[in-house]
Image (cartoon, rainbow, N blue to C red; front, side, top):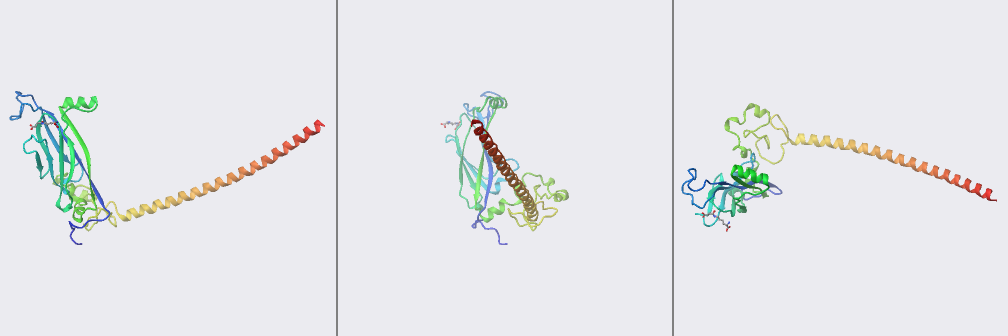
Length: 280
Ligand code: SLL
């Protein structure tokens, strides 16, 4: 197989990744308080952090995310803050909230241009009374949003990276990974179920054949489709039989109605002739 390219796109594929963009703000001890950090301007009442991270348990975002820039309020020193590595976050102190421009720079293999997001740095309590009570008690105000980044027709190199197993390596300590039991359960070295082809080729497609360490396969999928088709044929048969029954019942009903109609007509005719004879 030729090496995956960063200039060739994989047609008709789209891969999405979720990220969380958020901020946390904490109350600072007032000026003069022994716990107040040194060097913080007198008028600053909060310490805050703005961040971009992956939802817990999601594949690592560094596979596709190269760098994050946070453009904070212009009065701060060096307001364009750049994070080349995770954690992608900025911590500062201040007194007021403002809107932060966030620039997501993708890995060069993606061939994607930077994307922009915005996050309002919320410092004050918000939400319903019960939420505000928690914010009051913990002294922490958090505001988070789930964002989706979509890669339409990713480059071959990015597709390869986004379907690789090592994206979960950050979760499991080395000692807990792999092992015989894990292999039996179809667990890969990263502690996640094995995917792709047994020969190691990666794909979003199911492998052809199953095995001890391949829990899902095209073979198994075909078996399932076969079973479902048989069940569908069974249900079709039952439906046909029921339709036939319904038709028969309708026929009988029609015949009965006709019979009844004739009997009633006869009765009416007799009654009428009786009336006539009585009138004479
Ligand atoms: C606005 N919300 O958008 C206001 C501005 C700026 C807050 C809020 C301290 C900055 C620093 C700080 O918290 N500024 O020390 O440079 O107009």
